[in-house]
Every structure is written in structure tokens, then in C-alpha cells.
Length: 435
Image (tube, rainbow, N blue to C red; front, side, top):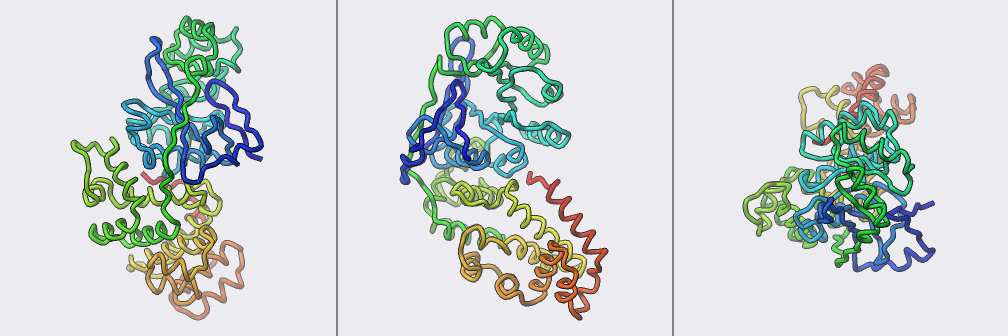
């Protein structure tokens, strides 16, 4: 069942027709002001909206934040959404470790850790990495200071206290404790003048809620490049293109170009002058960031590629790494074979995501013939390696033996070696961070 997103300041109630008012030609974004003690604007919280109605029916936290980021950075634009202020964006555990973080300029976004996140050493390490990159963090929906939250305080800058859910009698002690830890206190869900006065008296620094303003819904025309065009672009990017080749492919995707120019002109790249040409945008942004953005657009279109939180992506990621490791074991001095093996694994299940026959996808991606043959017909060394990988995932020893056959180069892939490579691939995917 979908959940109805509670807006900062009040609970929203979705009607059964909430999704029926969607306007396909438009995209929507909620924005609620965060004010300082003098009632001056300090920042905005950015909220998922899928219609002009001021409410959100959320089926997936990851997808909702993907939409928020895509619309803020690309479709509407940072300057139009945030002006000179920061934007607070909800992050669950999966999102903290996802590529979506690298789309957001660190000086423009505060990563708001949802109350559902369980804090552990991995989360703390990730917070340290992102803080070193310039991000700030906020704890969301705090009602009391538990031991896990107290352990998290060194890693966050803001603490948002829920004035509706918190016990008023305990608020003075909570505020004093947080102040002693040097945190910026944000009182959320402030709905009356009495709430505001009480929060100010307790020393809160920032305030948010319906007493000041309901979220505003921003709207712009949808710029949604076709799935096939995005796949074609990903295919070009996967081949390490020169700038002329990439420029030519991007010109076939005008909607992507518009968003790329906005991305290049954002403060993420610290440029001293506006980027006005496509070539400048490519140089400023870099192919890796363009690839991330293209993948984000695929996901924000409702497709679960390439987010790490998607079980399908976890399968593809570990498969690709396993095939790369196996290829290196088979041919230790062939970097190209290892790269091709990884790419074969990455695209071996893309047809499931985009709902097209594999042979059509291979044409769109413009992959090399050995990779295409491996995926479409299972032929060649890469095809055999793909079958070995699939059999290893199922624990099918007979299929592994059949796939290896009498080929001498596969003989190094003994059961013990395959088991080790599976563990290494799983560990790599679990620990891999795209910095």
C-alpha cells in the first residue's frame, strides 16, 4: 500500500482520486520555507508532489527523492527552486549510499536523515565521507533523545524536533541537551503562535510549519526524454567517447541538453561564468556525471535502473563484478576482456528493466559484437562466462561444468575459485561507493 507523506507542519490526507489529477505534461515539486528567529527565510524543505494538490502519495522513498532531485537540479532548476538558499531533502538509508547524492551540489543541499534509518558504523562512515565532501546533515522527526540518536549527533548539523509528536514536558530538557552538543535546532510542525513563542523561548534556531506557510507547489512542463534515447546515450557513454561524439549524441536529446546546461551552471562545479554551449557543459560536467544524470532520468521515469536499493540492480551489480573478477582470473593481462565481461554483466538484465527484446536493446546501446553475442545468443567466451555466472547464482554445479566444457582458459575457475569470487563480488557491491 502507498503511504501518505506527512508534510512538515501537518499530516496530509490523500483522497482516492489523488493520482487521477496527474497532468502528464507537467512536473510538480513541493517547497516549504524554513525561517530563522526573526522570521526571515533561511532554507526550504523540498517535497515530492505528483499533482497540483498539496499532498503526496508516496509508493517508494527512493523514487520520490529521485523525482525531487531531478526536478530541482534539472527540470525546474536550482535558481528557480532555491534561489540563494539551501534545500533540505529526505534521505533513507539506501539513498545515503546511492549515486543520487553526487547529483546534488553539497553547498546547496542538506541531507535530512529519515527517522526510519538505523544508525551503525557503515552509516556513520558514509556520513563522514559526505561531510568531507561538503554536505550537511539533519536528523528528522526527533521527539526524544534516545541512545542511538545521541551517538549520531557528532555526524549531523541540524536536529529537527517534531512539535506535534514530542512530549511538551520533555522539550526543555531535549532542547538544552541538543544545544550542549552544539546542534542547530529546528522546530518543525509549528502550527500556532504559542508553538512559535515556546520554541523561541527554548532556544530553537529555525522554524517550519503551517503557522508560517503551507508548502508551495511549483510546476513546470515535463521534459522527459524517451527511454530509447537515454539508452542510446548510455551506450555512447559506456564506450568512453570523445567530446565530439558525445556532443553529437546529446544533440539528439534536446531535453537532456537543457537539463545538462542547468546542471553545469549549478554551483556544483564552481565555475566563474555561465556555461552557454553544449561543449562547455560537457567539459564542465564530465562524462561520469552525465552518465549519472542519464541513469537518474531513467529511474525518475519510474524505471529501477540503476539504483543500488533495487534488488535487480544488486543482482546485476554483483553479477558484473563476478564476471569481471572471473575474466581477470582467466586472462590476467587482458584489461579489455575484464572490461567487456563487466559490461556484459551490467547489461545482461537491462531488457527486464526497459521491457524491450535484448536484440533491440543491444542495437540501441551500440555495444561491441562479442558483448551483444554473449547477451543475445550466449555465444563466445563472454557468453560462456555469463552462463557460468548465472549458474553460480543458482548454485547449479552441473550447468557450471557444462558451460566451462573443455575450454582450457576456463579450467582455472574451479569450484573453490568460483566460491571465492562470489564472496568478493558480494563484498565489493556491499562496500562499493561511487565517489
